[in-house]
Length: 431
Image 1 (cartoon, one colour):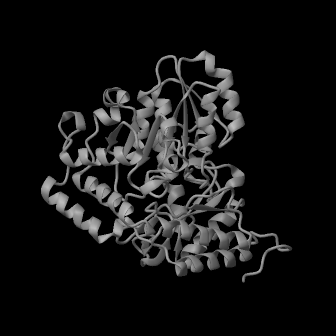
Image 2 (spheres, rainbow, N blue to C red):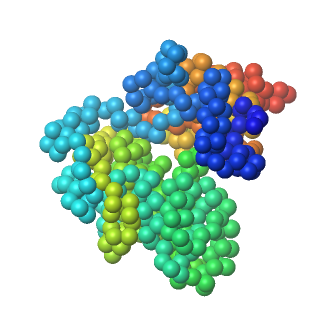
Image 3 (tube, rainbow, N blue to C red):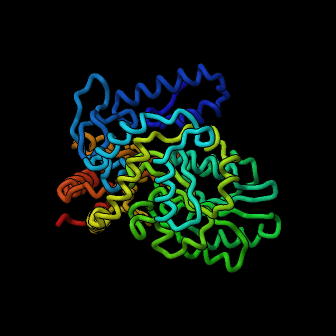
């Protein structure tokens, strides 16, 4: 079985299946051999790991035989850098002393503590909904809620760039579903018009900011479609909760549309530097979700230390608005520099900046050489994104310094010239 060494594992697996190879042991052997050769050539960054945990700058290990390399990290979703905040670390240690290290069972089986209830109350007050249900992870929040909510005669319409947790939940529901073109209001409107009278309920599922492209959803305009069509809207605020809206309440809050959104969900592993997820909605939906969302009913509660971290982070966000200001200033600063130099950033707006490089081989070489220069991020390409939309993604943090941004932008520019990412006749001059 031959393959291009640069073929990503998921693409290689599809290639094997297309050639009639279905035996799991044979597939595993092919993938292991392919992956081992890729690691040896340094083509992919998914085997690298940090020596001492996530930070904006830390040592990164490629393999056991290679010395760790100090790198600026651009692939971590700790937008506000609160995972290294000493006050929060102290709160976590105190909670572990008081509540222990784990809950041992699900919420419905006695795993909840006073600490978990405090988190739910804090999130309810912040987001501005009648009730909040706390889940062990953000992924299982989406998977459980979207598997539980649609009824027998319902339809789910989701944005084509939706996160895997949303799509998995929709598919797990076993109900009818279709997608609409990414952030395309006209396409969504047409589908709502076409299907509105054919189903009891329609759920429209979107994200406030999309993790691969960094663009914001037209949430206000989507909610305005409710004036024409009957539907329920489900918004995942994973990449906006904590740094948009008042005290980090989210993008729905910033746009003033919280009342119009039926279900607001978010993960707690990003801006709030912990783990877990939640859904904020009307009180009447809570019993339904508690008993129909298997990821709530049968999954152990998040550990007390993580619950304490969430509370500590929300307190820091409320008391130190400069954290959010620093994040958005870093986003503006890096984005302006890259745009001035001629990089293609797509339609991104949020603190996720994708640098698009269409040619896969150039993209892989580009990313490997960035790592050699002490800059660590990940390359994203087909089949995760379209063939023409390969990219390296840079996730901003409030903890990134201007010097780190300058070093990264300078390296990107030098490598873009080397690999002829720009049109040689028009590429800009560094100033």
